[in-house]
Length: 227
Image (cartoon, rainbow, N blue to C red; front, side):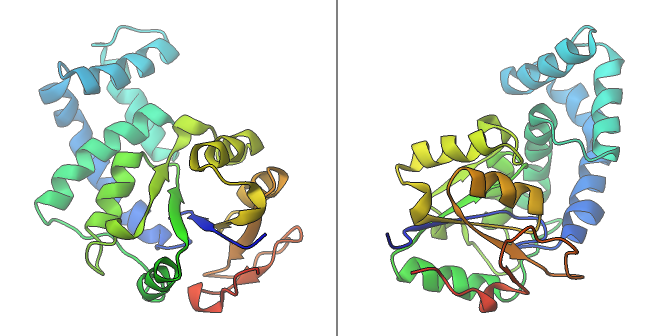
């Protein structure tokens, strides 16, 4: 079967890890206490705060909720509630032009070429769907959002779990043999391969010591799609 869709990660794949860790994370960390104080009664915000409160065993208005979220930012915990709240915070920064999302220079033209060739493009990232849309809608290369057919986050499951990729395949209506997953993390590729997807490792920095059988390229220009 020929390839019909490509699913891509963001950090270390389409975009620099430094942008996320040196720009987005510090921005959300600084803004989070004030954001929670101002918007804690908003139904969407309160939903995520309640999820954190339930997990740590305190009231939704307890200061421990904010302290926990700040700690999760510091340790880069991939928690759905944190990612959702960060997405809401980043929206303000993007809209106000305080930053633009980094994408590697090889990425936009290759994405457009794949799209022009009839491939369906998706994103699967630990960042919330809302954050993904903000990211690609406000990139240094302009608005790349129209290139994508859909977005997935950890609400479908963890990125190192094969079942997550099976859920994505079900959602997009394609078998794994017609889908390629791009990531810089071998454990994520392992899970995707277990679910039947083609896989490709992006080595933007130092070569990975153990690729576990996944083919690897340095950038998007080096990608040869399976027939």
